[in-house]
Length: 402
Image (tube, rainbow, N blue to C red; front, side):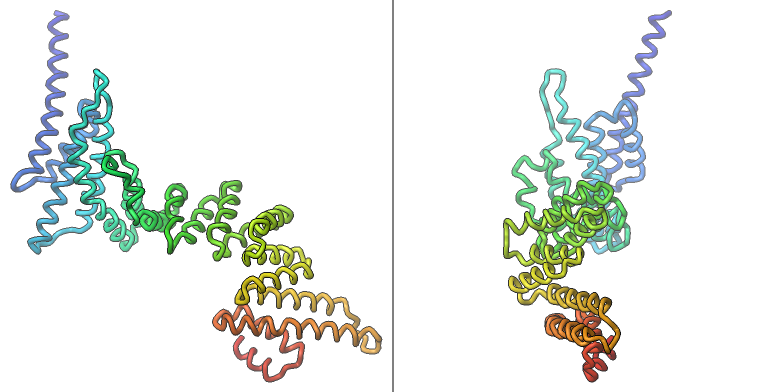
């Protein structure tokens, strides 16, 4: 009796396994029919993908990918015949095809009982994936324009990550030849930023910072995403200063961090280490001046702002801050000056104050010439100077601007 029951259990297990294998074949058949039934095919293959009898079989995942390939082909046939078709169905089928073929390849690379690998799917599936890879970009753009940042991230991210798939690199490294990689990684970064997905920003940023046009922004987003990890955040700010010296976000945040955490000496050490490598670098000189400026060491700030201007005679921010330091000095003298006009010191104090305003004037006028549209760099300073030097017509003109 026990033998009979045991045989029945084996027979039932075999029947169930056979049924699941049949589902995979029926799913293929439904998708490959002259009039494909994709709904039926999807239902059958979805069940097989989670069933214990078939979910670890490469053939199951290959079938799932082939069904997505057929969905794509039918949609594109409609497009060719100028019939109605759904672009997102096209793009989503490619994305799913990538997902299924990748798992198929991973399962196919597992050695058999003899320790050998027989991957009969790789060549054909890799060819299909490479042919459709550019459409991952189109799917990302379409999703992004529809304000679906999570979907856009999936498309762009798959494009970037697929460059490292072993199955796609048998004929050469994609990462070394695909010139679009940094740009698409930047798109992934934008989508991740919109989706508030810091982990994905950190993931794609190392590639995105290589984008010639948007590398600086990518580095900035990378730094923002790392704010929860102070050590890595500070290191990224320092790297940002070196890679993108024209973007003041990095040094401004670094200086602000050191100042707010009462570590001005660290900021100064960093500035000194940069100047030791490039003593005439305008940004590093400006950072040094800015640090002295914040420390209210006005004489040193003036010295380094002037050195910055010597290195770059069109550095508008240096002119503006140099003027500001002189106004701050004038204010300090004014605050300490006697208000008694009969005091012999009154005249000398007023002469000192006037001299500082006169000294600041040409710097602000230079900024106005360099950056006429950036009024915040010169208008407030000129307003104070014209007022304190009793320059009536000029004051009226600047007052109308402000």
